[in-house]
Length: 268
Image (cartoon, rainbow, N blue to C red; front, side, top):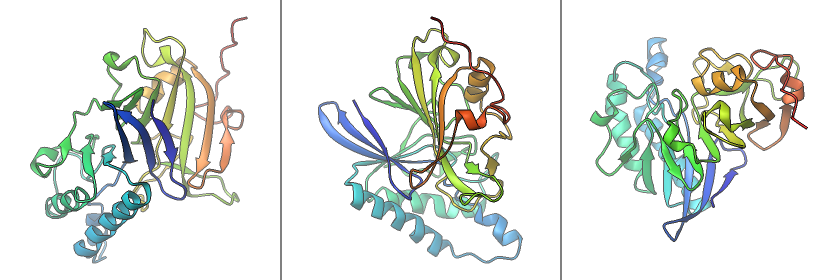
């Protein structure tokens, strides 16, 4: 059994438990979007690749030192471009991955932005399939595709992809990155599933969003969320800030799209 713990003030999780009779710790981060600096250059902003590399590497180094983690799991959208690799991505992604891998073993689960990643991934980085990886009862995926039915034994799913932001005018946390926690009926995700499934949607590791998504307005609704909403399968839901404060729950969200539905009555 693995414990899943958010690290206060950081958009990362720590997964802690036994794997093959060895105690292991993994840092999990999603949506680094390396290469988004290209957009800054197009707008006349000059950014130093060296500074960017050092910044990301130092963040992971501090996280590994703090947690004593053995591994780092990156949940997709490591790069920013979608159908190509830009020059800045080719220049700095191998350097960043090599640098990070000096602190802990790195696992990369590709997201929808990660085309051609095999050409820029160093040999010592574990490039996983887009179907994700399983640790104990946890499935780790990017979130842009439905999980395979072969993963139906899991009890928790951790995903990124959405970049959740809390946007409510006059609220003290307006514009901040948030966590989304859901407890859903498992059958909505896995047709042969029984009982409940926990889903944790991670905030973006990259804190300069090109197009932040409102927590209740999914620009392109991920298929897993679409299924959950379609089958009215959400039993519990919380939105939390990076420091762990609950800013909304399902009762606050049922009037908002796409959560404007009544939960199915529980059978007596």
